[in-house]
Figure 1 (cartoon, rainbow, N blue to C red):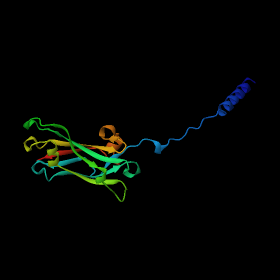
Figure 2: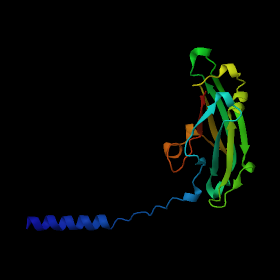
Figure 3: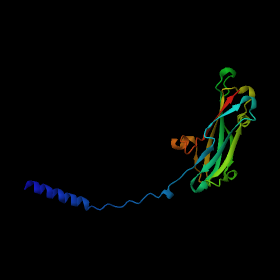
Figure 4: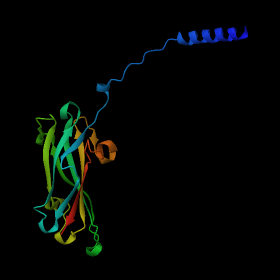
Length: 188
């Protein structure tokens, strides 16, 4: 008899628990969430380039870049590039230079790709352009040194994205291919 009372008590507790009403929670409004963007490197699938010290004008970094934001780049305003010089050869002194503005590319320079519908542009930076932005002489540059170019995507809503505020799945993943960082190694 004692076991029957226990089973009946458990049955009533179960019914009581099942009869509790749960408030339905609204689904997340994905379209109402704040969204960002990134510059995808379409080609080449690398962010490391080589420059020839003997031909700084003729050697360059060249990428096809695609501006990805909601609504096919509608929020895209500009892609700003800065460059710095890392002197990795002590033979000619330490000629490292901090960040200097390289160029700001407005969204109007990009054109819609017919396949993806996102804005695209081929971006080129010659060794000479990087050198001039930092006011470096030929004697200050040696084989083994490097230029580092970092990009910042600016949106029309005032937000901006670069390598320091973007996650590894965007900057390091092969799918997104958006490092916001390009290394130009100096070769002989």
